[in-house]
Image 1 (cartoon, helix red, strand yellow):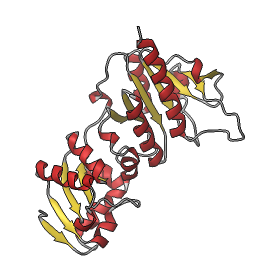
Image 2 (cartoon, one colour):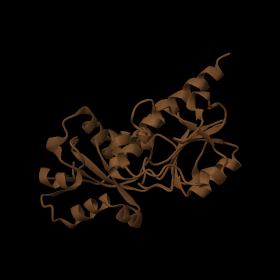
Image 3 (tube, helix red, strand yellow):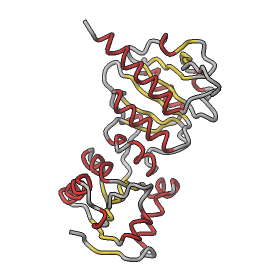
Image 4 (tube, helix red, strand yellow):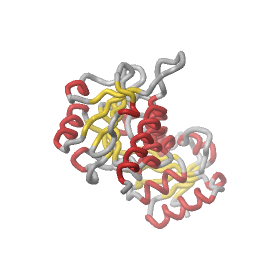
Length: 271
């Protein structure tokens, strides 16, 4: 049952929650929005703290929405009923599941990152579009990537569109954000070989060795990778481009490389 009901978009709580669409506000308040039932359920399962949830009951029709509401209740979260037009002020995109939550930003950093033996890490540098970052996270989850690190991020992990595009897999993966120089130092300390996707690379991705401890490094479509990866001694690899297009979407490149790595690592694990 909701703790209160809001019917006006001018309500201060609604204005404060809607302001979390902006990165500056997310960074200042150490809070972010989770829009979507599946995403919220996965956040709760991962132990993400929820400060309050805004619920539009007429829109909570799916099994996933009902499951998210039950999870909120079990977590003892504050829930606030809102009118449909008020909910529209908070929600994103076309998929309205009837629940948007204000969550506390977790402390995910290189210092807290836990990796298995011989990990395969994905590093995403300077990617600007939250949809691309979310898609990379979703593919990383599917392909068994050990962790995703955002280096010098053009967008942040807690952009609501990143969370939506990841389908909440953001909360199931070890992830963090850091400066590129610190990521390079971490790879060196942990003896992880960086493999950097570059258009001008001589080595095709199928000829690269993704087994053992390694990192796949991806840059933005507009600027590519920074010079930090030259200094890191990264092996440059490329995905062949046989048509008139001169590049792939970064999330498509990620999918190609992640699954080639999975294929190689599975083959190496066979007796």
